[in-house]
Length: 189
Image 1 (cartoon, rainbow, N blue to C red):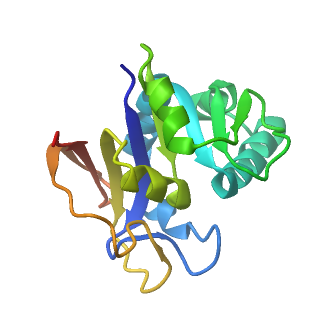
Image 2: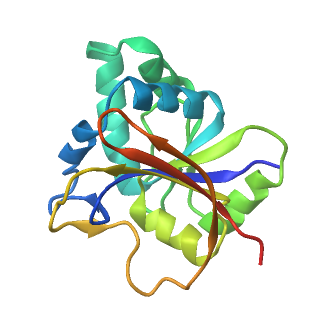
């Protein structure tokens, strides 16, 4: 079976993005060769990249522009070639190549995909969509890169009110940039 894996970069104080939409400047604090290598490993292990509408639109704008203007390297090639799924009840068309829009129940649709043999499904960003998957307990693994930055304000990745859960630590990777990559597995109930 495929696994559903969350990948996010957050600040030390738990923010997924700053006070403004797409305020991700703290990502620069952890980006380097190690995180690039991890990105390539994750992309090569993915059958699908999964996004909520807001994240999809931002990623599509960045990566389609990058492909036509400045895209170089394996990360750009993979981001543009791997099949993408976007969960949205309002999006009618998807311009980013290899994209399928899913307008039905997100958790039900992803559970169907997880039941099929293949590579994993990665959710990049997409805090609102991730809230749904956290609530429905369908993430198999949480991968978080902690940036050594206190942002002080912004959108937290894990909002108050989430049901209590325990996880098993899979690995810890210290980055030369000062960041840490934590991988946690969902514990079976």
